[in-house]
Length: 323
Image 1 (tube, rainbow, N blue to C red):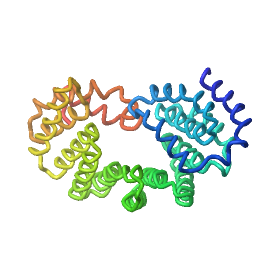
Image 2: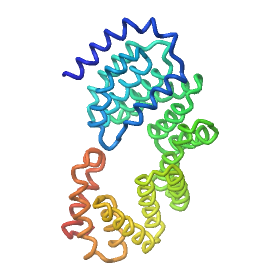
Image 3: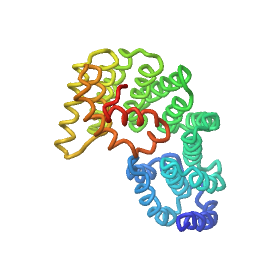
Image 4: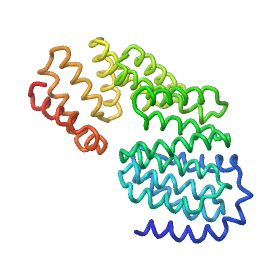
């Protein structure tokens, strides 16, 4: 309630000065300002990120930068969406929408993206796709290359099958041809998404492996250690699908040791070690790993919502039941 009140008070304040500052804003300045708060993102902790963004609201008003303020609100909305608080996300986006004008193209693009993401996360993909398409077209018209790639990437998620992958490939083309470093920064994630299309939907495990390796290399170039580990996990998953079971197990055990050195555990690594051991006819060894995986993954919100059967299978295997 208190946060919503902040947004409503800001709504009144910003309306007073928005006309006076509108012509002073440019795409370049908006991009420069947004990089500051975008660096505060922690996608693994959207609740903490929302708190940090909310702390920035008074500063956004003090800067008298309407575009900056509206973009900040779209990211607060995204924090809510990532926590499955779709009603709250849409309420904030309603306030953004009411203040949007043609003077704030970047804010409008980000509004479209976050409204679309909120719909998509709530399994309303048709509504989401229409918004992502509008964001793609507006981004292209205004030269907002980073957000154009984001929009194409989201269309790759909203659409299933070959149609979705066509958008993934279009996003890669836009990123690879861009001179914008932030736009090119999408490549690692896009290679990953394409890899999973070929792995899960097309059943081309070798091509999936090729893209997973490209994703790993791109993350290494950005010095993103945690993302590199996730990409290596995915490479191991492709090894297992290709029947390269000993290589798959070796890679996952290597990841387990790396996490142990950091005094961390990863449930997905434990799950995959269990799967490799099971495939190698070492079921007695696998159950302990499935148990460790289940304990860490059973309360993961997106797994509970989207893959409850996966968690149920983990529980059965942890108990030593046959698959």
